[in-house]
Amino acid sequence: MKLIGPFKQVITLANLPLRGKLSDEQLEVIVDGGIIVDNNNIDQVGNFECLKSENQNIEIEHIPDEQIVLPAFVDSHTHICFGGNRANDFAMRNAGKTYLEIAESGGGIWSSVQHTRNSSEEELLKTLLERINILISIGITTIEIKSGYGLDLENELKMLRIIKKAQSQTLATLVPTCLSAHLKPRDFEGDNKAYLDYILADILPIVKKENLASRVDIFIEKSAFQPEESKEFLFKTKDLGFEITVHADQFTAGSSRIAVEVGAKSADHLEATVDSDIEFLAKSDTVATALPGASLGLGEKFTPARKLLDAGAILAIASDWNPGSAPMGNLLTQASILATYEKLSTAEVLAGMTFRSAYALGLEDRGRLEGGMKADFVTYKTDNFQNVLYNQGTLKAENTYINGQKA
Ligand code: NIG
Ligand code: FE
Image 1 (tube, rainbow, N blue to C red):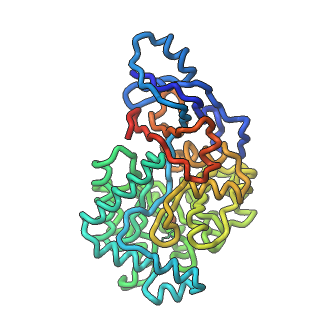
Image 2 (image 1 turned 60 degrees about the vertical axis):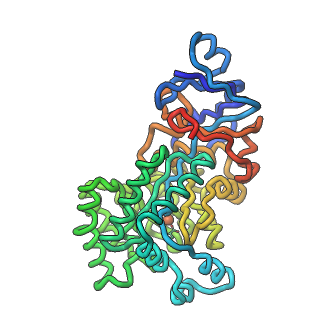
Image 3 (image 1 turned 90 degrees about the vertical axis):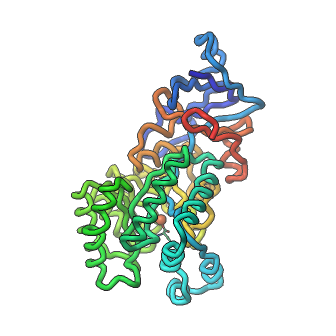
């Protein structure tokens, strides 16, 4: 057991509801607080001096200067295992080229697939770990990571095995997701249905057997997989025992409805979601995940986060860090910008990056600072927690703690 503190402010996020809008008055801010950590978990949170006097001989990890502490962040949607880079796509898009023109000139998802297939396992592992360490340095300790740049048995397994290997070399929690249904690869002989059947018959059984992922994702969109074939595929993946998440309503409305109908843990993107589907999502347990990094990367509109929260949805905010549509990889910058455009309270933004995004991953043991929770948190040298979003990602984290230890 040890007592960490004193902190100028401890923002616990305790007692906040899982769904719907939040006001900043609902935030619990413990002034001059401390955290008692026992093994990997939080034992108690409270006033530092009280905790100290109630626990006479406890070891103390003294926090110098004025710092505040927040629960560590959970990035519930990333594609950070990839080879190559798509800077040329970015430049072409900004110069007015269309999606088709970029794909025809060798860009798009297919180009990342080729680079990823051609990268050695060592190189992919090295760059993946570098990205994980960047995320840890900005306070993110739980990271969902998708496959989806392999798109055949050999290369999808290669990606998922590398993610598993990365887990053995980092203290962050990695949550792998099989996104073999990102796109039908150009070298697959057969239609979409045949490719989805191939995933079901050839890829997922091995993913299951080797315990490489317990979640399956699909990109439902005009340019990728169509609603009906996707729905059928998702019901079958469910029968195989996988949890589901969906790339939904990015450019075309309708697929968030499918996510809800199949009981997905989350529907992510939602930039094009229409009002009636917002209501449908809000009445479900499917988390609505905004990905402002993709809006910023593509110059598209933001997910209607305000409307989703007002309707009572569970809103998460994730980075979507990937080489194509969301190259930035800084969740704090992205969430701060989403807040200014969508008029989100600080409480709503912090909840969206912590216990609400954790819920999307089925991890209800983290994202709040209270007894029994995993001792993952992030500290900043500042006297006011509002400065974290106010600085739009430029206020550097002082320390990220994982399991009660500085990472
Ligand atoms: O979430 N929308 C589809 N998939 C990714 C983009 C991946 C890529 O462009 O490489 C996304 O934005
Ligand atoms: Fe994505």
